[in-house]
Image 1 (tube, rainbow, N blue to C red):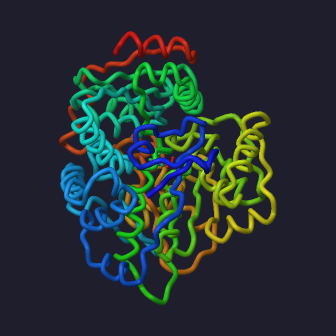
Image 2: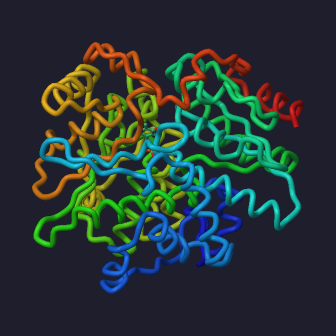
Length: 459
Ligand SMILES: *Cc1c(COP(=O)(O)O)cnc(C)c1O
């Protein structure tokens, strides 16, 4: 499969570059030049597969020139053996909708599903190439822990994680900072997640620096993450497929990565009806999808910190699609967003968006009320992010089979849960030790040069 950048569609790349670079040199995002489509026979075959076998079928066409089927098979089996569910995810009925629990991996959020695979992709790449790599990644709380768990202790690779100081839950922080492996470095940046993300982007764009430290990225723009995440849309779809009723997904959204993975599943043949882009008060995507105004505002801190984002990086992939894969038009739009913080989506494009996407927004009280209502009616505890996804179906009118993505385990957000239903959530037994463990992280100003210097000193 050939890939191009959203900002230059004449140069092509192979999956290996797409994976290792993360972001294209021109600042654009990688995207397949053209997509294969699974047909009805494929889908019928897929329906009977367990999660791991299904993952192999869906991922292979995207990466066939990086590794053969046999190697992919071993890596998928190894990656998903770290999960507490045999089939990686779990689909449970909660009231009139189904909840797709994606948090049964080592760090209790859906990010593990892609990241465990990526960790083993890196190992495979480094074994074959005899190279060293430094991963630098920004996290709104969950990506960092998932990436650290996937990379810790691996040879020839270090990981530097930037999180917004004091803006993630303490369980989220402890899942990142209590490891003892020497190849893991945690940086608490005095700033927001968007600041962290901008710092990482700036380091990538500084080619001298990026080449010097052999930098690689695992942020949600990494295409490898998107393809790994598209698998659970297929898997859950087949679990409830009912030929007469449309299937809709509600996706708690920050960087537009997870919901884009669903959209990709649709584009390669899974007949999903609609996606609901569910946001918290940081509702730039809701405003964009409702009335076309993609206007960046300042980030508000909420009880769903993994979605406290105003610059939804993966949205550029949708912008590229809406502009008929024109790199020129995409560059123009991205420039406007960067310079003015504003982009008015034209009516025609908005109509196209609305074929696939609806949206909703929840404020803090609505999230707490949803957690409470779901607990009282169905004896089920949802974390604040998953509650945003659950409640979204009450705000939009979609008939059919409605699936909510539950993106994190409630125990990652104990104070929000306590506030909503006065219950103390517990970590799974095997993770309880992190609560008393010594933490390792360094607090650094929101200053590009200081962060670069820190990384250079550590490697
Ligand atoms: C990262 C994250 C999200 C948002 O996912 P995106 O791919 O950034 O849209 C939602 N919920 C949780 C718990 C997360 O960790």
